[in-house]
Image 1 (tube, one colour):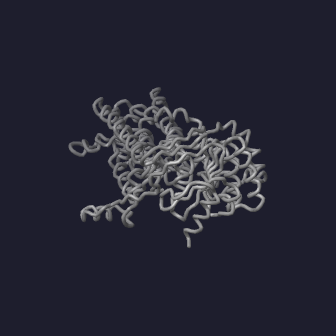
Image 2: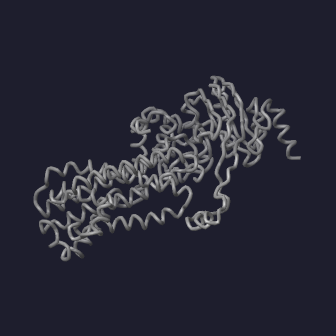
Length: 259
Length: 242
């Protein structure tokens, strides 16, 4: 299944471009929209919250980059998760009329969101340079972490889309779950101000560990999660994606029927 | 390009009542109601379709005509039995087939052709030919959301036949076009037949079926009621209404 996807890279690229073209064709700012949202959110949060949390950061500075790195990940989850969740419904006209691979459309949806994630690294670089005047060389590994985040989001989205073929209100429930996951990720507050059970719960959220890893690469090495939490996150990611692909294969007919 | 169907059944799971929310489902589960019931769209169908023929498919609404085409196209897997299509490609033409409304005719040609298995570079070379056949050269860079249903049918038919498929599956698409399209598409189908392609044509239009198809399949509630000489089968179909 995965090898088939690699063989169809040109189709995936064509469809991903199709999504981007279709999304931005009738808009004034075009692709810039995908940058405006995270920048605007970061700036608003920065001005509102910097006085509260800035002093609590490890090195006492770099709050804008701190915010931006978390917002990038959680935007990716919100946007990618819902794009994958709706990918079969959105492409029903094709799936019910042309023989396609079951993974293609979820994959294309998450690729679109991943491209936005990569574009969001540009304002992140600007924030880091503005606040600390130098960019750590480890920054170049962020796309690699982004890849794992993308795999996790793809897995979650596929699980959602399978459930949605039976219950339409799963999309509404997922909106709430994404919100809870967002608040349970240390985006506006540093993980260091939490302790006890709350800290455990927040660390059980895989996105917490991914955000902290990105901060370790981009801002300060003190953010890196421990080896055991890193392993936990990677294993969880693999479990989510492999069960998603396995279930998709088995319930593909049910999904097509529901379209 | 023989098509072999060996004891093929296709069953759909139909919700027993309208129940789209989790709450309704939980209530139904606690009341131990059956959530889904299986409905046979096609029941134990076996047939061999030899190459180089145009075969008609007739039957009332919901008889399983589209399901049969989708099985042969490989869009739906059979629930039981097996479908063997020894051709390299089975292209299906249906109303509004797989087009993205915001993309132009040209962009849709590339996407649709690639989905049917032709490389993008080849589609780029073939695009003008396709547009010319479909009489849509001036609309090359127009989003297809502005197209009429006749224009969409022409474009879909032009792309699908341009791929030179071994099996062409046509679902009710010829009836939306005008006289010129009907004649042109018939000529194209004749060309394909003479080179050993198999064409399956599902339609309610018995006049077209009688004119184009040598053999015809008559489906009734998912069962194969008759398969044979078009004249006999269409007559049987007409009698079934009286």
